[in-house]
Amino acid sequence: MSFSVKQLIEDRWGENYELHDRHVNPQFVKVLRTIGFDKIYKRARGPYLYDKDNNQYLDFLSGYGVFALGRNHPRIKETIREILEMDLPHMVQMDCSLLSGLLAERLLTLTPHLDTVFFTNSGTEAVEGAIKFSRGATGRDQILYLKNAFHGLTLGSLSANGNPEFRDNFGTLLPGKEIPNNDLKALEQELSQKTYAAFIFEPIQGKGLYLTETGFLKEAERLCKKYGTLMIADEVQTGLGRTGRWFAYEQAGISPDLVCIAKGLSGGFVPIGAILYRREIYRKIFSKMDRCVVHSNTFGKNNLAMACGLSTLQIMQEEKLPERAESLGAQLLLGINELGKRYEMFKEARGRGLMIGIEFQEPKSLKLRAGWKMIHVAHGLFGQMIVVPLLTKHRILTQVAGHNDLVKLLPPLIIDEKDVQNFLQAFDQVVSDCHKFPGAAWEIGMTLAKNALSS
Ligand code: PLP
Image 1 (cartoon, rainbow, N blue to C red):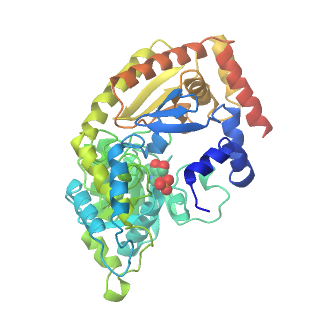
Image 2: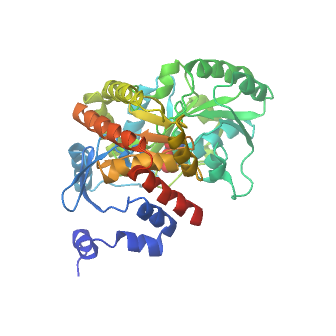
Image 3: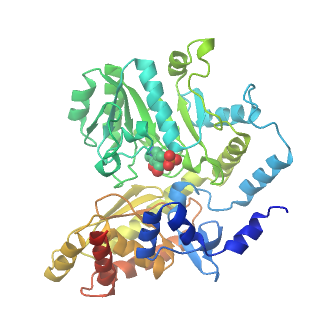
């Protein structure tokens, strides 16, 4: 009997949540069911998801940033078809494949100060490698990182995570230290000890959407050089056009020693990641012929990922996606901040390009304050009061990110002005509903709070 994945999907349609409840992650299933996110999407195109009744959902999450080009981009699909048709000798391993060389060449045109690439299968693997290279190149062990930092969840990346809820319960991690974001005094105090292999940072933090200031980064670069610490820019989320530049660090006019990328690089179908770094560091790690694979992986340079990477960069350049992210992002940010002024629980919207955080704050009026207090029995619940109706009433997918009552927008870079307007209208309605206490919006919140306390 032949295998047909199409047939399989038809036969088992609708079993998604039961299967995950039984075999994958029942806690996650419980969360999705509680907040009404247990939808089954049937198809997707560009910035939209569709359910079986063909209802359209605007995707302002883009698979955590993976679908920068939108979903099922026809040219990426064509690249995949083309490469499969060619019967190429994939991953011979004891050879040098053309496509990985070409993607490395192409990527390095975007980072003229760097000249060497290591390919990985994910963002966290890129960060792991960058940490390992920094340790190997400097002979030092420690990693300096920022409060609220998120660099992935494998043990090395986790060691540079500035959120206790991720780190707790996993035993001893790599040596390192957390400092507050944008605190030059703390930075110099640590760096001057000359024990740090690397200082790792996200130009805009994915958790909490805190911006690392350009002045801080500029001075950090000088201090890192002075004290012999390498600078790792984690551009896994901010990279490849999202913030209006190819890389967000460009805004600060700095030249980090290592740059980690992943997510949007392959157009969404195939796992991918890369470390772009200096040859000087390469020489210290891969120092002799018998150390030529001292750091390596099996799938990193696979042809499918490499071809998709080349195709993605071509599309991003032709469609001017960084520029598009910059102008649409500015429109979106301005629109949210303008609307927000009318609402006392709105604090601010911040970000760059199409990476935006909307933060809420404790209200002054007594009635709303009572609701606010009740909802804060657990972290993140107020954000859910925004995110849940955005999806269930307005069919817009967003997420809560961080502990600061923050809703995050990470749309595909191909959205248009109509999508921006659609979001703004829905946002206005949802925030307005939250300012009516008691009211339906708060009932959702109270249900979530009850669930949070009982689990
Ligand atoms: N670094 C940053 C800044 C990220 O945002 C993420 C994921 O969200 C990672 C690293 C980890 O990437 P991955 O999930 O591909 O391992």
